[in-house]
Image (cartoon, rainbow, N blue to C red; front, side, top):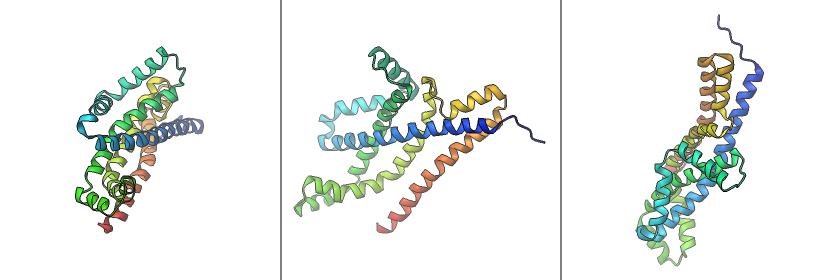
Length: 217
């Protein structure tokens, strides 16, 4: 018969780790998306030449492994004596990492809107802001949503790397329990189930929005 020494307190410990994972993901995705929108719009409006410095910086965040970014970010804030807590450092680095990828998603979504549609809007007397708000934003959102959902899920899983900064998120909590209880398969199975429970609603919500919008093509 299956037997385990895992207690309710251990499950509560895993739940606290899951809450930390959700907190880091929520802050990073929210801030990263807002920055990504700004960077994406700037890259389209400025053109390839004038946006080259911004593109170069974003390419760095996309190219360098996230673990290295977290370690360097923590070292830089320590050298600068900013006094950031590990949670703050993790959110700042993950937000910039998310923004780098989100800017590409936004840029692609905007450029997917036909130029003739935008010219028609401007010929009707719409300002640039009205064109972006009423024409570009709805169409670009529909194009960008699947990639953004994938990015969100990816950031949630990548947030496990913040354990290197001392944060006890879900994966780190499971590692602590594995070391103490010596039941790796069972504990990691529970950890995987929790990740699935967190991810599944996000994926299904994205699918729901895609189905809802598809009849309007």
